[in-house]
Length: 126
Image 1 (cartoon, rainbow, N blue to C red):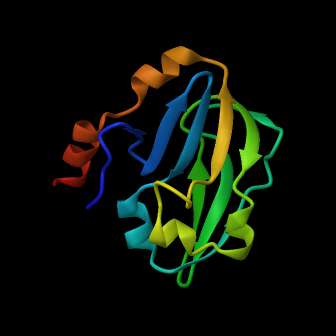
Image 2 (cartoon, rainbow, N blue to C red; image 1 turned 90 degrees about the vertical axis):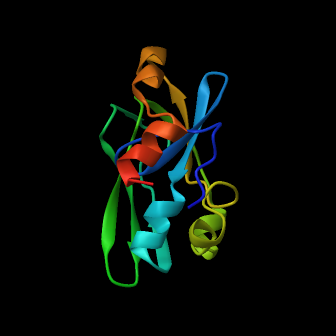
């Protein structure tokens, strides 16, 4: 299981890369493997400001649809549009080309509530 040390994580299996006052968000290697072949990623919240744990989109796999929860409050400023044509990037490169959104966060203290790689590994039992 690939769990990069430099990222933050949530119990809902999202990963977060902090870059100044912006975060990049996607789903973890574990999440994509549990979902199976991803066929569609939908984010209709671009340019909206949402609170932590609100649904920002959905990911659709062959057998299921799962909500995507925002791990930190803020404005969704970018959607990875390449996923519209190639949603399988979430399966093949979840921490790279498979990123989903970028958020300008509004409450830096929420970063401290996110999980470290080691804490996320504990949740997975690995």
